[in-house]
Length: 520
Image (cartoon, rainbow, N blue to C red; front, side, top):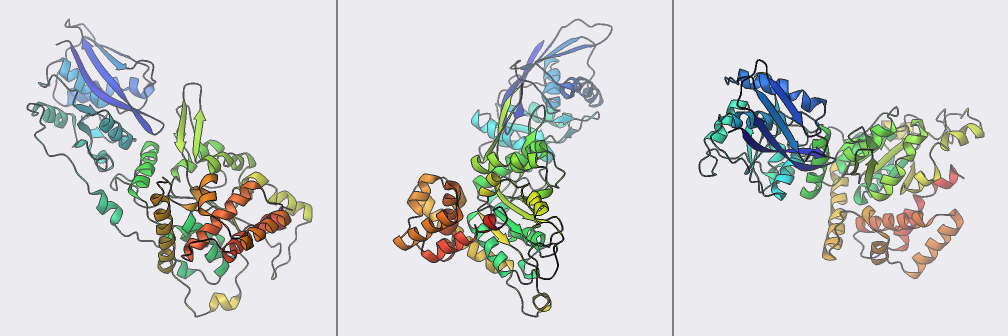
């Protein structure tokens, strides 16, 4: 049989496309082998012919020199990566009758081949498994290292393989469409049910009760937060402990996050599923493409890797202004769209932003213990690196003053992450109950739209007057108005209150006063 067909997949953005791998050879032998590959392959795919030829030879198969043509269809999609090695090798062996099973349509094959015939892992296997389920392809043959992440998708049989010979044996032992080998399984409930252990705890932070309260509110409603204070006051220390009080991921959130990490190639192979909220802390030398995503074939950036988790930007004014400004759109829309000449891709980017900064270049403006050496224009220039529109998208602004010696050396034990987390989880449970009972597909107060704010954040007459006075006196925008109401709703949830009262609203307004003292 001169023609053979196998199925594979290519990942674009965070979704996979079905690729047909067709192999044809002419029966006449030639002096040297002619191996042609068509269907817009990139350099990694074109190089696969050398890997495939050697892997087949080292697996004990002798292929006479002839004309071999491999077509990757549809021809108008650019193919990249090394995942096509396995289906190409299987296609060649099938064309030469080394595989007795003639119809491979129930199988999807993805994997990179080593020169010795071993099968190596490739990124992006979770989107491939999801696509196989959607296209009703029952069996997925993939590298053993990729099996845990693909197995979280129910409805597809996962068959991990270690070598090309293993694949041939698996296909040749298939009788009447039934694979004679049990598929690989994982328990997603067990994965998500494991209690997360954190090496850091809020017990370690002395003092800073106001900042801890603000972080608790931020974690309970997934609100963005900015901490301003002198060097050594504990801003970074507080931010690094924030993951220890965040609510655990739901299965849908975990699947979304794992998909992005799988495509980016940063997924822990043994875990298979991202089971705790991501914490990304890029250095301030990062480029805008590194933060948002980019490349010839766009790859997810830090904002997408932080999807459903936390993005921490330490020393905020040290980031280049153009890098910070690209954050404005994802903070509002929760997605990033990267347009290139060849394609336009969208990545989800629903993250919680935590940022820390000094109030001035020397760091001691407004500090009682040290004198600030900066002139007013220097301070103005420094804080002006964070633009008004970006600041407007941050719900909570909090001052973190230097810790007093007595608090630092005091014997009283600070409240630990476990107690704070219990309150956060209780507030989250109230939010889930409220949204799900009304059929809303959102997870936290921060994700509420303007319509939902009107429904769930009703104010009494006193609260209405307080908000009106705050809006006029502080000159707040319509966006700030919505964000204050979202924060007030979260404070009410922490209090287990049904309605937003004056005290809840007052606390939310208090978290917006800094943009007037520094950015006036």
